[in-house]
Length: 109
Image 1 (cartoon, one colour):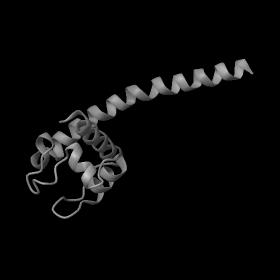
Image 2 (cartoon, helix red, strand yellow):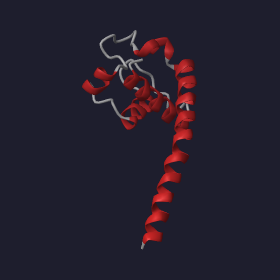
Image 3 (cartoon, helix red, strand yellow):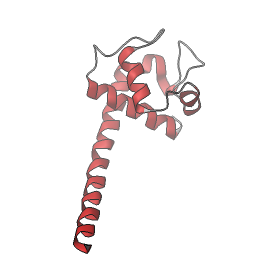
Image 4 (cartoon, one colour):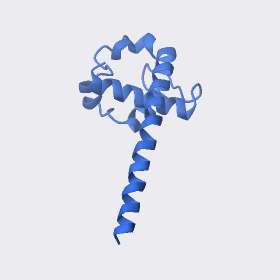
């Protein structure tokens, strides 16, 4: 039984350490995609079209946009003045941007 427990712990550690480097790469890629496609309206987490709807943590929480899934949906499909990027960016690019935005909101932009 103790061998099985050790094996499971080892598997969890390997999984944990293998995920972190890719997350860092995803956020870095997300930053590049954001800079190329989103900064015109959202520089510094702001919103030049709708100033009250920023990408800052408090606003993402208020509008229930504080998850990768919600941000991914918004970027993919657009809404109101925001265009849809689903036809312009790959799913991976959109996921990377969503992770970057969420990460930056948590860090305070």
